[in-house]
Image (cartoon, rainbow, N blue to C red; front, top):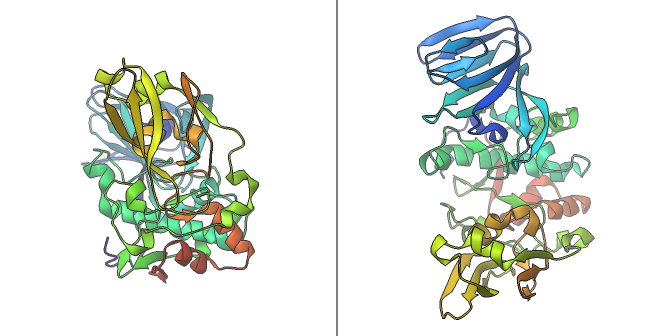
Length: 387
């Protein structure tokens, strides 16, 4: 992804995953606002109390119905836009609560009358809502700066790649959850987060004139891996993404899992296998291929009374289908067969590509700067200030 001209912070469009494709959503604006459509101004108000949004032969906002699609809410005072959520990032129900956002809100109605809400926000304001969601703000300042620079680079790389729009058919550049990077609007925006973003303003990670696709995960478990082997969707094979020995994260006991994850073979069949094979009884599940740092890249499933075997991508087709948070990573010990289930022990947390966040914490404790940390995890790349 060529750097090209980046001489000012762009805006990014972020899909709000906690209400993505809901039938109804409630929004509010704490002050004056305008409603815009493709044709121009559609309306205005002095204050928008909590109002239900629904697709009904147009877009209904409270008592008003707008025939255009999408419509855009534009607060006249930044940070007064609010969206109510009834589920968390993983889809679990929560007590209804509102979250405030910078920027404006695009509301799209899909053909099935479900909704897509998109927060369009200045890149630097967006980052203030990322750093405190992705890292612990009590950790070292240089480690936190690495997160801001990595998140900035990743956001612009994804915006220019347009992968979500081209491949997924989405109406935005980034998800607000682990599928891209976690963004919480003003939920975790603090004076410290603002200071970190301002101190690194306009800094990107670059290799030979190209933006690096700056993946990161919580703890690599001892080594990061070639990103194109793990994050297979259009990830460029370049030296900075080839993986490095880490070891820094192993200083913390939390790197090794406290107990194994036990999953039934029936669940594996139902979640990971094609429908025509789900009725077969699984005989064994084995790691059949690993990467240089030890992360599993391929799992082989074999069946009772059959010579057939199914090979699954360890991250995309196995771990993700069985809920990533349960398995933490793909850096596993040999799988333990328990008859009707398997038990998995391992190390690390996350996919293991790019920067190790716990490793960055430890490197910062050793006195390493943000640039030094990033250039360690992405060898050959350099931190460059663009604006």
